[in-house]
Length: 191
Image (tube, rainbow, N blue to C red; front, side, top):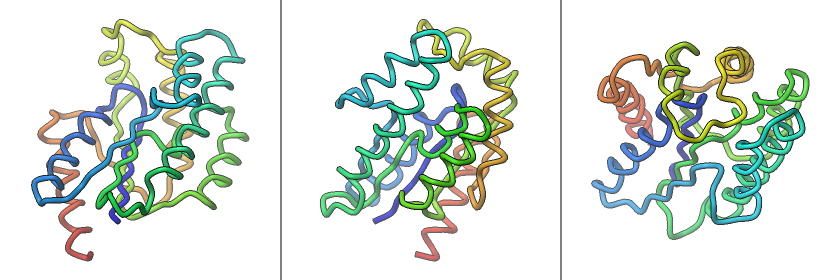
């Protein structure tokens, strides 16, 4: 099974690029499953989303905890299952970066010990200013979608990730996807 992770901050284009990657592998005849967190098909995902739309420190903490359990639920249900050639997880370990730095480091280290990882892990990145411009037109505002939060979470994210494919998304969707495809082509050849 090919295990692809698309992660990054809000507004970076994770779901868009996950769909493009899905299409790539479906065109090759593969069965592809995307899990984009928080998912609405389970208790943890629903409560993570509810907390994200709330206010205050307690909702930040709740969102992070429910989010982690939502991700673990997806891994339990879909990882290495016979009916799936490629599993794409949108929003994965970087969710820990929304916690205070000490907890973020602990959470990332702890979870990366027992959840699957792969060479197909992408961190989509751009400046917090660019992200803020992209997300400020959204109808629903999530608790972490302020310029200050984006700056802080990006710094923590870049400290946490090791051996990820970091892709600059400041250009067009097509330019960004070409960068992703180049990495996918290289990894698929190694097989």
